[in-house]
Length: 248
Image 1 (cartoon, rainbow, N blue to C red):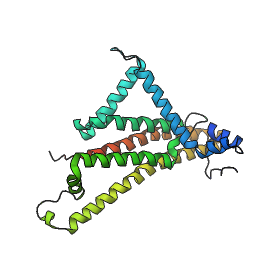
Image 2: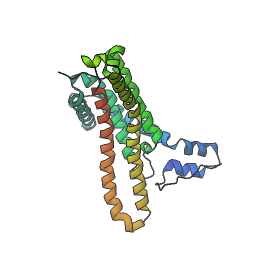
Image 3: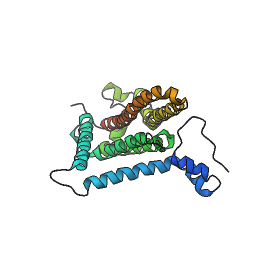
Image 4: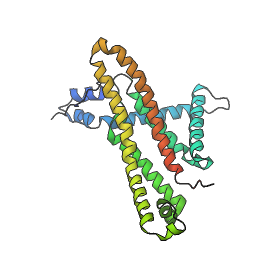
């Protein structure tokens, strides 16, 4: 039994090469079936190693690696607090982890014989579901059940509070938007990374004739990979910001 080949052009990677070579063995079928998940765990290992090396010997005068980590953490913390406010600092670890994980997944595919796991929808959907569950859980915790329902109905007051149809319609629209968030969040990231990978693989098929266009496209896709990680985390931050009442 062999795994079906991809219908779109893609660069060969070490997992797919090994899987095809050992396709008749359970090991080969395992590699082909869980290829993207293996790369997702590889990215987790890279980030864990970076965090360990950057924090194992903390010094008042930081070295290069510690300084880079502190600069990155400071940037993410400022970004989150700028969108949400000082109360949003508690979300910095979650959003910062998302950013590091996504940008590393997006960029790892530019290393020869590796692949971006964020080009697979199952990976990005899992991340979006984590965001959805955390946002909804914290909404209920911050607002309470009654406050959450009131928030979802648009906080009707005065005459609007005595109408039934309008608050119910607003509640239904908000619930629909909440449910659709994981879908749009995951598909936006997956589609952009998948499209960039497919474009570069297609241009690579032209050989040396397509090399100038491929190099130019690679620069654009590199920028796009960073932007997509920022957009994913920006939207996540906005979702958390919507929990709080900013009438003041």
